[in-house]
Amino acid sequence: GSPAAAPPAGAGAPTAPAWLDTITSTKTLAGPAGLVYADIPARVFAYIIDAIILGVAFAILYSIFAALFISTILLGGLGFMSFVWLVVLLVIYAAGSAIYFIYTWTKLRGSPGQRVLGLETLNAADGAVLTQPQAIRRWLFLFGPFVVVQVLAMFSIFGTFGSLLSLLGLAYAIYLLYTAANSPTRQGFHDVQASTVVVKVKR
Image 1 (cartoon, rainbow, N blue to C red):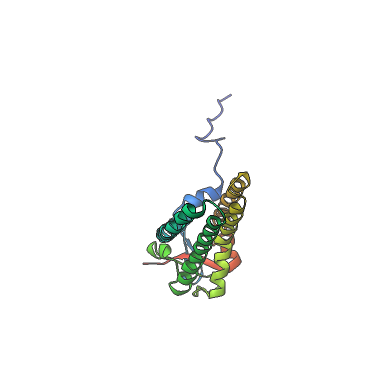
Image 2: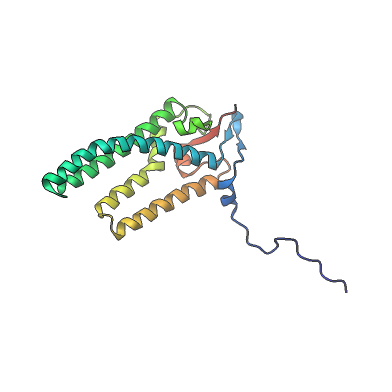
């Protein structure tokens, strides 16, 4: 008989899950009312820009507190006051993050990082600007778990339990990416909870 046809190139090779392809794809999706759902890479880069802005602001603030922290060490050693300073810095960073994102989502239609890349965070139903309660809810589901992880890790004195909490934080970040990549409207778990979408503005 005739020889069997050769299998097509790549046949039998394992294929990556579709959601992994979506995470790296820059393709946007058309939505209702002329909206275009933003791609995942653009959203990640926007967050990196925001993280840099917040990081610089926090570094300046930390340098101010560091002088007091060093004075505390020289006067009383690594004791209760040192722990208090750490707690204060964490609270300030969490509050600063909340104010930064909630204000810009509701007043500028997107965070500075998003605006640089032409993205906006809007109400999923009609594309309207987020209400303040809606923005607060989105921040809580997007960043709240990471704040909780940091607090618990601090109280565990950064031991083995602290490392486990860090892994849980990483797992949550991956889960947010996974849910956004699997959604036909690119809505991550935090977007669903707050009824929000991230769109790319047509220019």
